[in-house]
Length: 273
Ligand code: NAD
Image (cartoon, rainbow, N blue to C red; front, side):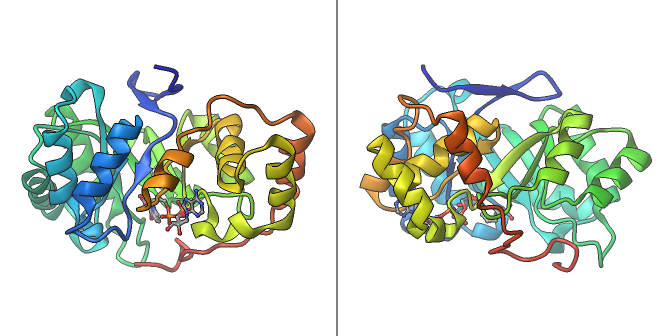
């Protein structure tokens, strides 16, 4: 297919464009994921905390798509951090998903107040050694949390999934990732929808004859990040996938770069959990 893949530091690959299901209700998620798979998405991003893993697994199994052609990410919730509790939480996620392995397992937040992410990471290393997880990574880790993992464990995460969009471009964090070979994955890539109403994004959308969401997603793809937009609306699920047949010029990439505002829509990882 035309879907670009990003090679991770453990040699596996992940589709650059995936589909997120945060806030998709449990009783709707199977239908939404089925629509995404029919559209062509092969990578689905869920989490124990989204309380919809069961419906995600149902849709994946019912799709008839070969397991090796699917890419499934789930995440360990903050309350389950710790070695033994991670093992139990992973078993619970797998039972809900109904899969033999997940492609990517992420520590959802560093939750530095509890200070358990290093021992949690040791459980992640074990799960990968057992082949129950293909790749292990983190989410919402700041440089200080990453450095702690490097120093205490020696295993570099394959991915750090962080809030990233034109108003929060994470230049410093991306530099740390580049230095250590960590892939950057962008959550809330559309700024939870808000960036779609931005005037300069609108101007670019008119210039390219595209929608604002497509322009923003194209910016992510050209930046080289993995991106997982969410929509429960069939037409938008399709719209967000039609981003491989045009390219933003360098000066338009730079114009979007100028929208940096250090603006978080989500929690500050240093204070959350
Ligand atoms: P997003 O930036 O993908 O925005 C989603 C919202 O944008 C939708 O609810 C809809 O209102 C709007 N939208 C989507 N497509 C549109 C279109 N084509 N036109 C107009 N409006 C459109 O935000 P998100 O859902 O917060 O993030 C995406 C995914 O990232 C989540 O579903 C989840 O999988 C993941 N995520 C991870 C974390 C984390 O802590 N790791 C946190 C938040 C989200």
